[in-house]
Every structure is written in structure tokens, then in C-alpha cells.
Length: 164
Image (cartoon, rainbow, N blue to C red; front, top):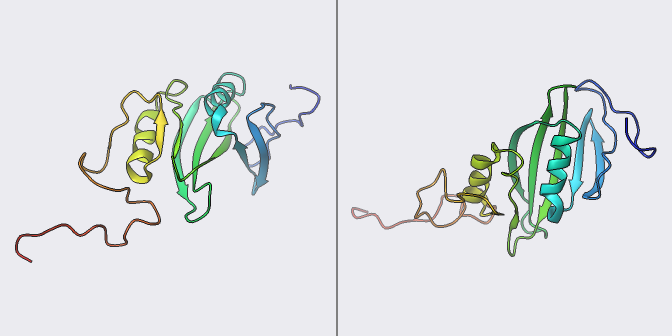
């Protein structure tokens, strides 16, 4: 079990899970049987390592991002984790500034983070420190801008066309 301040964990996907005991967790939210951990972005690697090694969230299902423009912090990096035994899921969210959107890479915890982090870099312009190959993955390497940012033009940037 856990320390005295932890409630029992649910064993099924639909059951609410308890508060996870780690200093990076700023808040725990429960909604519709799902658990969301709001975490300190400065401690994301340590928290993810803890969740993998001690809580058995061995699978990184995805990483995505949300642009809350014009709010600050502007971005939210969202990690979806999955435990096989017992079957559980948890969502981890970190808020990241729009001025210099950067967070540490979790590639050292889950190799599956490689392409997810590259996609977030490509689409939102969020940097992942210590990523082994942080280059565009969907857009051409010389593409300017980040298409999933809310301030990106709806029709994209107009490029010069020879026969227009």
C-alpha cells in the first residue's frame, strides 16, 4: 500500500484512483472515473520515473499539448500513462510559459516519447530539453511557424505562387 496520507487505489479503469505521493504533484483531480495529476514542470522527469517504477505506469500512451492563448502560462503538456498490472490510467498535465515554451524530455523514462515530443515541438513549438533528436517530424524542415498554435493564421501563411 502507501503512506498514511494515501487513500486506497482503485483496481479498475473506471474506479477513481487516489492521490499519488510525490512532491511534483501540485493537485489531483478526479472526474468521470479518471485521474489527472497537475504537476510541476521542473520535476516532470522525476515524477514520470516514479510513476513508471513505483506505480507501474509502464506505458506512455501519448503526449499532447493544449494552447490556452492568450492565457499565461500559455501551454499545457499532457501525458497519458497506462498501467497493465493492475489496469489503470492516469493523465499528467504541466503548464508551460508561452514566452519560452520548454520542458524536460521524458525520453529517458519512455523511449516512446521520442516522436510524441517531436510532434509537440513541430506543431506547437514546445521545446523538450535533452531530447536526442528534436527536429520537425510532420512539417518540412524549413517550415516557419507552428500550425496548432491558436495564433497561427487559419489559412496558413501565404507563400508566393508563380502563376497567381
